[in-house]
Length: 421
Image (cartoon, rainbow, N blue to C red; front, side, top):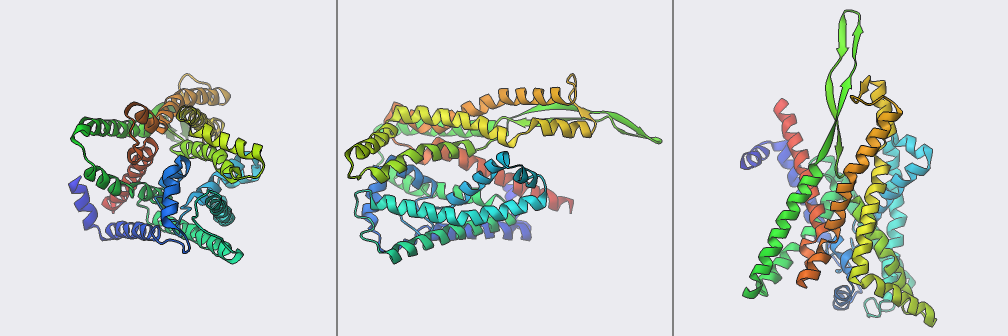
């Protein structure tokens, strides 16, 4: 590892790229601590401390939402926009065709950026309205101009982060959006460790050691599942052209255990947060039955058992759903047939597509089960220990490890490329 680090530092171009990425992450964390004027910071922190749903959102924003900073929405609107266009590719044939070539993908990226602007404005308005109706005196009485300026500022903050993310991606040492999420998650680690040291009690030593062991086991599990794949053997037919023979080689088609990454967890969180956030708008309604219904919805989702079961089932289901969106056995079968490739013992065409589909469903079961357990890991740990462990939450750990693996791979590919030079 140290040799690799020395090698990276000696290559000027690669060193400058990494330093640029680190500088962009520092700018992001600096922006996350610039609050929007006119906010009661103490009342805001009390609200987030008392509300589990808002606390979960705050973790993924890297604490910027609790500070009511100019980048409080993070890159969530951009992720939402990306998901919308991916789903539209399943419904609209024209978008599906655009996804197949480079120029079409560039157009979709442009549309995704443009759609981020209204989504960021809409989400910022919803969050401001939610804070106004929370019962805490956080924002006071906002005029039309004050509300408009807040929405413009928050929307501009999201677009700024989207731009930073794309600048990072251009350096090819990691995915910009993933690194911003990564930086937001680990930003809570120093304050958590500080609180742990200050409040350390010798009687909790075994409990802390247990948490450390579980964290290490979880990291190992995430690496194994992320890197795990089923290699489907593929044989290419031997072809004679003139006096030369082509093909006749053997290779394999890798099917990943976790094709969907962390997208199912993001989907599941969005679905779980939606009813509670909508209910927050109606909890102060003058109509009694509407206020009671809103309170009932909030109480239901704050029940740990209901929340945990719903979370697990949604993650499990969305893993299969998203795999169906991104993995197309028919296209793979068609491409293999065109290139003269076939899976030994399986007829080309429809039977190959069915074989790939059935194999994928069996593999994905393990990936979906693992993602579901990772998602509810903090709830399981809290049930057995009674300790809240958001700093080492399963979802956060999964994202952090996945981003590190992806970034290390990109840096290694940059090193390999320069070795060839």
